[in-house]
Image (cartoon, rainbow, N blue to C red):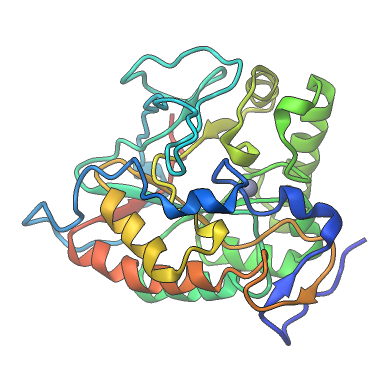
Length: 306
Ligand SMILES: [Zn+2]
């Protein structure tokens, strides 16, 4: 059932049959929306003097507290709000059943980098190399199908000390599924990650940030915490590495959870520079913005604590 990794080319387009669901953790699947700047910008990463350069504390140092999403508006970079889920009061701690975390609260200038839709044998290792170079720990929300296809790459992520989260088996819109279907998507992914990586995930991110009552209920049953984001550079739409970097730098502030993509839902590998599966812009942007965030005193954590 598993495909062997393909290392020879790094520009890919995946099967047309799955294109509509590809690589759109950032909610809207309309590429034109990527032109707008993120709404989540609130502070320049260079605005706070005196912060020490640092790398990630241990995962247990994180103490995230969810911040409710503003609205699921059509604005490109606003984090999506839970669908058919209880409203999250501002400042409510934890991301237990019925709500997702939109921010981490682990101290001044502590933020979380997250990478969705991998693993990809092409771009995930490049992301890992940059994170290693800068001593940064991140969270990778993996698609179960991709874990099954690229188990070696999935293991590389774990072996590098990063956290792996559940991002469903096939990246569906969970709002279209009954509870049994949601459970199947999530359970199969957690089991596959456990089988491949030896670690059962404790975090869940819904495709497109579309958390539902069913997803919250299933996650509660399975012991998974729902994690969203509040900085979305819409890298999946390939707006240019400069645009991605500037959106991240413009929006990141204390507590930010930054959304990136290191992979894509994959049904077939077809070389296509600039195609929907090409994450080189994300990698190039990371190379640009990560040292700037570090120089500005930001440190990185993972959102693994309630
Ligand atoms: Zn996704």
